Every structure is written in C-alpha cells, then in structure tokens.
Image (tube, rainbow, N blue to C red; front, side):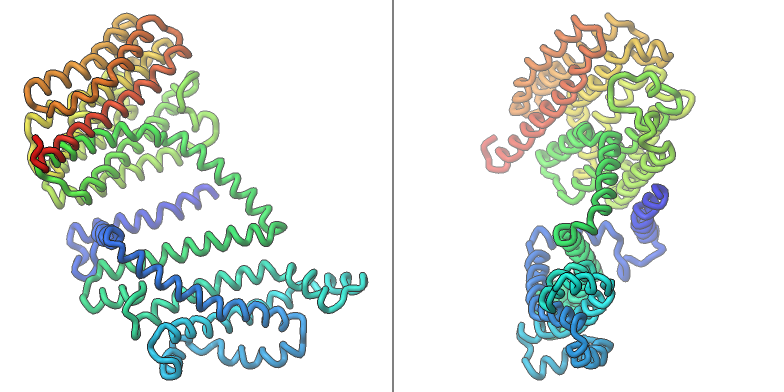
Length: 560
C-alpha cells in the first residue's frame, strides 16, 4: 500500500520531469507545448498581476449562483422523488429524457432566451446541475434500506417524520456525492460557457490565450481549474465529515494515520534545517542585486533547487547511516527513522533520489538559461551530497565533512546564486561567502562535538574524533570566530558594505556558545549548542542579507 502511495506521488513528478527534459533537449517543440517551467513562470506572472484571482473569482461566483439556483431545488425534489412514488412518476421521465442532452448544447437556446449577459451563464449552470443532482439524490433515497422505514412506521412515524428521520439522514452520503458531482460538472461547464460571449472568467482567459496562441497561458489556466476543483472537493469532504459523522469516523482514523506518517517524514526531512541552503542563495542574489542584476524567477528556482539538494543529502544520509549501523547507537539527534521501523529503507532512498532529481532538473533549466558553469557546480554539489555518507570513502566518515559543508554550503551556493543572476564570478563574491561558510561548517562540527564519544566507539572518523576533545573545541572556536573575523576583514577591504556590520549584534550569542563548548563534554549538555549554532547561522545570515539589501536600496535612491 505504501509502495502504491509512493508511485501515485511519483508518477506526476516523473511526467513533469520527462516533459521538461523532452522540451529542453528538443524532442518536443516548445512552440506547441512549452515546458512546465515556462508554464509555472507564466502562472506566477498571472498571480503577480492579480488577473488569475479576478478571473477565477468571477467563474466561481457564476458556479456558486448557478448551483444554488439549480442544485438546492434538485436536492429537495430528489428527496421527494425518493419517498413519493407520485412525485417520482411525474418528474423522473422528464429528468431522464433531458439529462443525456449535452448541456453545452442548451447554451444557444438559453442565450436566445436570456441574452448574452450573466443571466444566461448562471442559468446554463443551474439547468445542467439540476438534472444531474435530482436523479442522483432520488437514487440515494431509494437505496436506503426499506427496513428502516418499516421500523419508523412501527413506532408511529408519520410521512413527515419518515422524511426527516429516515430518508434525509439515510441518503446524506449520496446527497454529498451528488453535490460533489454537481460542483465538478458545473466547474467543467463554466469553462465552456465562458468561451462564448464572455469578457471575464477562467474560461475566457483560456480562450483569449488560444486566440493569441499563448499556449503557456492556456495550460496555466487549466492548472488553475484543476487546483480549484481539487480545493472544492477537499472542502466538500470536510463538510461531509460534519454532516455525516457516522460515516466519517473510519475516514478520520485513516487521516490520523496519514498525519502520523506526515509527522515521521517531517522529522526525517528536517525542514527547519533548510535555512542552511536558503541563506547562501539569498546572499548571492542580494549581492547580485547590489551589483545591478536580479531576476526573481531565477532566484525562486535557485532556492528550490538548493533546498532539494539539501533534502536529498539529508535522506541519503539517513539511508546510509542505517546501513552502516550508526543509527543503532545514536542517542541524541533526529535520525533513526529506518532503525525504529517508522520508514522502510527503500522509501528513504527513493525520496532522496527523487529530491536529487528535482534539484538536478531545476539545475538543467538554469544551465539552459545561464550556461555550462552552473552544470558543473550542480554535478559536484549532487555528487558531494550523495557521497557525503555513501560509498566506502564517505566524506562524513573520513574527516572531510566540515570541509565539504564549508565549500558547498558556503562559497559554492553563494557563487552559484550570484552567477545565475549576473552570469559572472568576481573575487568579492567569493570573499563575501566566507562568513556563512564558516558558520554552516560550525553547525556540523557542533553535531560531531556532541557525538564525539559515540562516533569514536563506532569507528566513525570525523575531525572531532581525529583531533580529540581539546582539538575539536579549538576547531569550533576557529569556525565561529572565523565567521566574524572574515566579516570584519572583508568590510575593511571594501568588499562588503559597512551596513553588513549589523551582524555583529549576534557576537554575544557566539561567545556564549564557545564558552559552553569550553566547559561541557557530555552529549546532553552539548545538544543545545547544535540547535543554537543553527539559530546563530540563521540570524547571522539573515542580518548579512539585510545589510546587502539595505546597501542596494540606499544606493538605488542615491544615499550611498
């Protein structure tokens, strides 16, 4: 079952990836079928201008009014058809005859009768929904077990009581399904209705895109229709849980299991650690903005790609730590989901490879925009992330973990982010990346300081185990202290603007952490150092970015 769930999640992502790849390498002509990246870029533009919200809102208003006028009466009539043979004999032949008629074929007749205004669009929805819902509701009532009616009659229930106590509650699940079908049909129909005589709405947007041969806008409109349909279904499911609680209990049990599964994955993928990937991306982009080059779309893609590679690294680490047995002796930390039986090893490995695939796919798009330099950065980044714990000479197991993290989550990401924006590399960018490189390496070293005794017992070689306790403490001082020394030196050399000195407000926190490291040796006492070093990285990095952005804005307005 879990494997099937993974496949259902993986299949659309694989399809999007293959679609993107096929367009990028020329198998599909982007004129006729643009890649997903272009479609989502167009969608982001429609969101930024607010057009997609206006047109979607207008379409939903038409659907809502049409459903109220057609769906509510249909529910009432359907209930009476179910409990009254007379009403059923009067209404069912007419409903059964009209229901098969394609409802879009009724549009010309309705337009002739009511004109091209809003009334005809709403009326088309109302008529179409009515016959769909009335037949389904009537069938739902007829499926209620007749014994329920007999029991009610035996206790003296009158016809009115039968309606409220048996027919309505017993058919509520069917009524909710009818509403879902009706809303889905109405949303489908409104798109076609808005093709004719409309000057707004999501269908109109799609039709205008067709007339301009803007295929990316057409597909973006279809994506919005699909998303709206899904949200409506989710909302109606929640309403069903309230109205039909006796049927929803089993579903709620399944939901609790899903929430527990989500919690396990949330802990495993460690989303709170992604600031380590986001800070250097934002820093590189802010330096590029200071130098006069910024593209928000490319920044967003770079951010997602960087986080995806870190996610892949986290998951591959989880997989290989389990294979090498480190999680069997781990006391502190957040690993060990496989060892505890919460996740299967193949699930973690597959998720890690999928994350690397997403990061690589985004990287290939950035290569097509900026050139081969990003390709090589991406190749080395993915390889470093994978072989951090994989293979016989895993970097984390031969004392190269801090060096790898310093290089690839400091200078490499900052330089890559800057290059995506400016398509060049400068020495000042390399120097400006050093403070975040020192600090992100300090996070890893804090982890290794805490696990020094366990790693030594297990035979895992880190710089902490190689240097010993006193040497490892000195390394922590060098990494944290190097953060502030490199900052002050680069500002003094004019590499970074003086506004970045705002990061010095974090220096007292750094000193406090170094003091803890100097006096503590027990893992439980060093555990807070790891968390606080990660917070220090986030605060320092955020203030550093703020300094660059402030300098950029002040320069733009002529203040510096």
